Image (cartoon, rainbow, N blue to C red):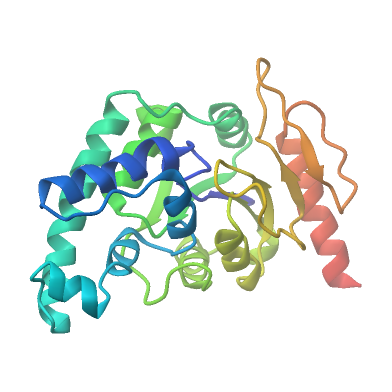
Length: 262
C-alpha cells in the first residue's frame, strides 16, 4: 500500500507567519519576557526545529541573568515547558478561529489518496495538539480521523534528523519506496531524504530561497482550481499540470524505484 506523509507547519497551512509567530510573541508578553520577534528575526528562528528549541535559543547567559531566569538546566526546562504549553494553547485557539486556511490542494489530494486506498499520515515535531488542530481545520474532522499522526517530543532528534520519519515508517509498516512526503523546508526535506523517502516540496513563506537539491519535485503549492501550482524544479520530468495529482505522486514513486533498481 502506498503512503502519503505530510509535514504540518507550512504544508497543511502556512502557519509560521500568521500562527506561530504571533503565538510566540503573545506568550512572551504574557510571561513578561522582553522579546518580540519581527518577521526577519523569525525567518531565522524557523531554521531551528521545534518550538521549545526556538524559545531556548533566547537563553544566552546574558539573557538569563537580565531576566532572572534559572541558570541550571532543570529550571530552564521547567520554564520552557510552561512557556511552550501556553504558546500551544494560544496557537490552537488561533487555528480554531479559522485564521489559518489550508494551503491550496491539501483537501483535494487527501480526498484523492483516501479514495485510492493510500495510507495517510502527518509527521511533525510540533506539539501534537497543534498538529491535530491544523489537520482537522485543513481537511475536516472526518478526513483527519483517517490519518496516523506522529508529532511532538516522541523522537530524540528533530528535523533535519530523520528520526520522526523513521518512526513513522516503522509504525506504519511502510517501506520508504512506498511513501511520498510533502514538505516545505530544507530541514524537513533533509529529514525525509535521510530516511530514504521521495519528497515533494511546496515552498512556504519563509522557505522560498532554501536549497532543495535532490527533491523529487518543487512547486509553489499542490494547486487548486483557483490557485494553480507553479513548478519550480522538476528533475524527474514528471511534468505536472496546474494541480499536483495522485497520478503525479505515483509517477514519482515509480521513478524513484527505477533509480534504486539501477
